[in-house]
Length: 112
Length: 115
Image 1: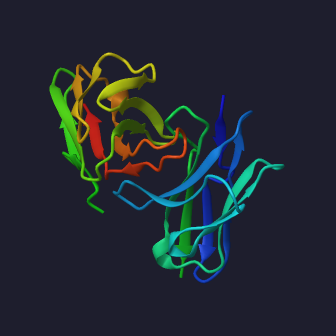
Image 2: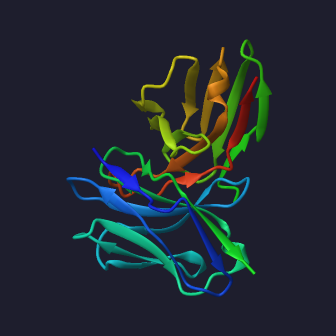
């Protein structure tokens, strides 16, 4: 069975500060990892994904994530956040079920 | 983003009502999904359709009945729902390439309130 743990339910941060949103997964097989963002009253939008190859993945809006197999982590980072980054962020894993298993989400609140 | 549309965006219904949620994807994909997003819970997969055939039913109660008439349209028929079914229902689609590697594209969701 696969599972995803997002350790922080809320992350407050000041504008232009760096941020890291943590994601750990549990799986006994190869995984494919995704980060999605959900803005208020909207659906989920893909930020980035790791399928294979380089463990550092760059996504949209200046976000990047690093796949760490030994630590079973896929943390999301951004060096300088904007007010517009305020949203809920979801980490997800797929190991072959044809559908995603999501974490419980991290609410990023960027303050001026 | 208009790749996946959902209607209605908001729905209030009584426990004895029958209603349907509609999802349409304009991306040429061949797989579609229903997810349920409840407050303080992770997104839960409900159904998966691949080439119009249901390939997964994640132990969803029979008061939820999906329908996929073609690869572009997906419905979720609702009847005799319970208040705990109130949630955001998200539709997604993807192009089947190699299992697990597909990127799923989501619609804006239908926010359902059951009174």
